[in-house]
Image: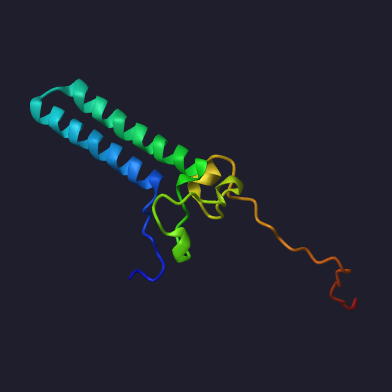
Length: 118
C-alpha cells in the first residue's frame, strides 16, 4: 500500500508520540486553566517523550526511514542494525553511532597524472 514504507510504526515511535500527546494535552489544559506551572510541566513531559523515543530507538525498538522487507514491517519488530548505528540517522549520530561506513579503499598503486615541465 505504501510501497514498502512502514511510516515509522515502531515501539519507539508509538511510545514517544503517545507520551508527547499526553504532555501537549496536559500543557494545553493547564494553559486554559491559567496554571503556568502546569503548562511548563506538560512541556517537560514532551521533552521526556523525545528522550524516551531516542532511547528506545538506540535500544533497537526504532527503525531508520526507508523501505523495508515485509518481514521487518510489523511495529513490534526489533531492528537488527541498531547496534552499529544507522547511516544518515541524526539520533544515532548524536549518540556516537551512524557514522561508521564501510569504505572500500583501493589496494593497488595510485597513479598520479603526468605533467610536463616547460
